[in-house]
Image 1 (tube, one colour):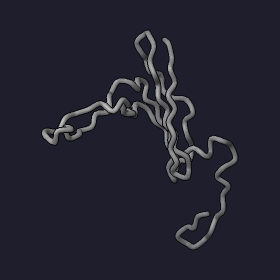
Image 2 (cartoon, helix red, strand yellow; image 1 turned 90 degrees about the horizontal axis):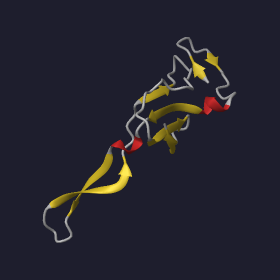
Image 3 (tube, one colour; image 1 turned 30 degrees about the horizontal axis):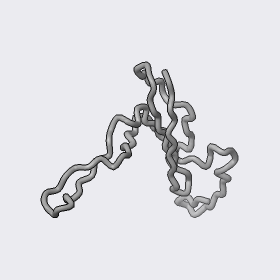
Image 4 (tube, one colour; image 1 turned 60 degrees about the vertical axis):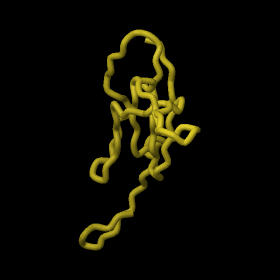
Length: 109
């Protein structure tokens, strides 16, 4: 529901297809390219040291999102040239309620 400046209330059904539940989605074409590093205090209480968590940082290389003025959403990402070999792609999706999820897909080029 929305109300304009004149006080007129309009009701619009926003979810007619499954894609209407998606507010934003993004792709990281090389997910394992950036290690997640955290600083922790050494066990002996001395200096701080940087430690790899074993995970990677999602780097948004392409995205499509809805705005209040433009409710359309691109469902196909742009072409992205990748070097031959195995790699992991990550796709992050945020729904209209703000819940986000990410899946990692391993591909061979």
